[in-house]
Image 1: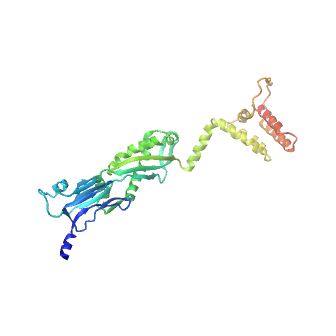
Image 2: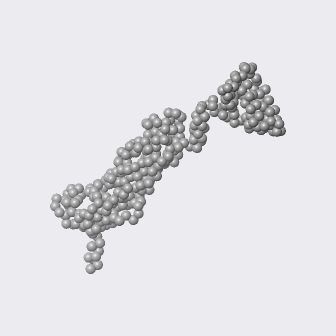
Image 3: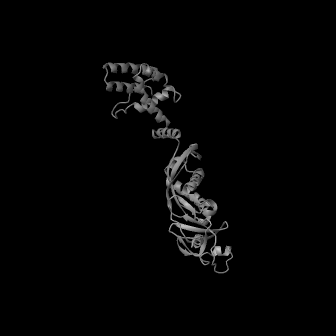
Amino acid sequence: MALMDFIKKQFIDIIQWTEEDGETFAMRFPMADFEIQYGASLTVRESQMAVFVNEGKVADVFGPGMYKLTTQTLPVLTYLKNWDKLFESPFKSDVYFFSTRQRIDRKWGTPNPVTVRDKDFGMVRLRAFGIYSYHLVDAKTFHTSLSGTVERYTTEELEGQLRNTIVGHISDIFGESGVPFIDMAGNQNEFGAALKAKLDPLFAGYGLALDTLNVQNISLPEELQAMLDKRIGVNMMGGMQAYTQFQTAEAIPLAAQNEGGLAGLGAGVGVGFGMGQQIAGAMGQALTPQAPASAAAPAAAAPVSPDDVVATLEKLHGLKEKGILSAEEFEAKKAELLKKLV
């Protein structure tokens, strides 16, 4: 009786795989020294595939269903083993199960900034990240190109390679598109579609289908982003001249609060556009209120020096601080003096 029990243990008549976790991608069925019984039952569940491998060569591939293993259901294996009639003895074969479930919400990103050529900024470094989803469609290709004969192949082993593949093609797609960074950041869907089209054949080479790929963010490193923000601010002010006028107007009240501040400002008036008169004229345009339409045009007056105007402003500011002049009177006098610089 013990001998019969031992003999029965050498044969396998049920082959199936119940996935115990969501991270196993491929699993070799534990054969040990067992042999498969003729007429054995093979169960392949939904979201699975099974592959029979004979002496290192992929033979028959099975999709979801229940199968009775015979020469009819194992045509490739029958050919490889030269079975010209129904076999009645057990046989040896490696059996691998593969999970075809869709892997969703898988993250990808650039661990370090990627250097690309931008038509507006020249060479820039950018970062990008997003999510993607995929699933197995060709178990034979996956077995021969990736998983091989290992007992268990996990998504962790696979997705490191997939992320590197995605990141490795970002610079290519950015360069081929010819779209500036500023426009690319606003068209992330188009960038993602172009990247997916580039990666589809690469995933197919692994026996996989890339179902979706989304770009969630494209950005510059912090130091480059700060420079871009400053450039955007200058453009929003209407260009460099308007930006300089704004900065100068902002500096006058601050300088007046410090002893010698306005004098120092006057000494530096000549820096910027090359001529003190030019920058002062810009200041006047930015700060002088429009004269009423009914007012008569003032008589032309000879321009005064910036140092005289600054000195006068400093005295007027002192009078305002002592309460002799009101704030409105000071502002009116300041506008009048600045107008004389034009």
